[in-house]
Image 1: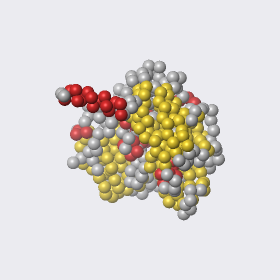
Image 2 (image 1 turned 90 degrees about the vertical axis):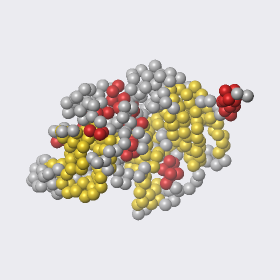
Image 3 (image 1 turned 60 degrees about the vertical axis):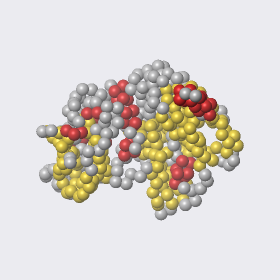
Length: 436
């Protein structure tokens, strides 16, 4: 028997043993001996889909469990197969039927067939582990009305942080949206947050040692954080995205919803944008959404709500105590210094902790062209009626990474890491770190 024939026979055998992904519709049956909080990983792609191309953005998948609506998944990652991990909630003991099918009304008209496979069904065991409590209380998020069918401001990922309290544990849930249609202008987002995605805390819950709910809160319109008194499905709070900058409310008009698996993340000595670094495909989604929405232009002026190609930017993550001062960076490229604030006071960093900035460089600049980073402190204007006093020096403690995006809008390798303690006085000399 020739090698070619053996290969063909082996291929046929594998095809028989491993069912092929289904097109546009899939049914999965499973059985639990006892009630379980359930997670599912769906491996899917859609032909001709491109989040950056109008009319071909994505296929929307509608999920039902035992005939009841569960949620939607938007195949935003296009033609390449990708994993979409979701929560089905607490399912009773016995047999269940998960059905995944294309929703033609919410799918892009030019999107091709969706290839769908269920590669994992995880039934969480009983107990009080962080992951079990976090998944069993993670929010169900209803779509903002003006995003339904519009392929904008898509919730890409949900993560949680957990901390000990005197009474038990507190879980904080945040969501990364592909953009925000309202709020901060695009170029200011890049200057002061280093991204065009929208990252929002949406819900917090404190639980006792045995898992009982002690308090709940959510981030509502105006960035207020009141107590949550809304509806639950099981122990999952129901939240409606209600503003163009993706604040949430306890009720709303939409029925389309998302329930992504909540991923645990530790943000010690890193910024929230580190969650994006761990899921680099988000940079590509955000970049092509900017392109589709006309927010990428050639050399736009600051304050214009547009940016150059995201691949022209250098992204810097640093940490420090800013206090009552303000901070900006300058990027040394060949024989010039390019300021991150672009000459605008409101484009400076005014928060403590770890932060991210992104600064546009001349077209054609490569990471190897960057020779140094300068960190400079500035005085902030006093509040109305307050006397002007010199702020304490800024204390810079870390530069975690410096990188650019590659041709596919994915983060490249960092060219600099620095750790120390530098005091930088407002109006004084900048602190400079050279690229090795």
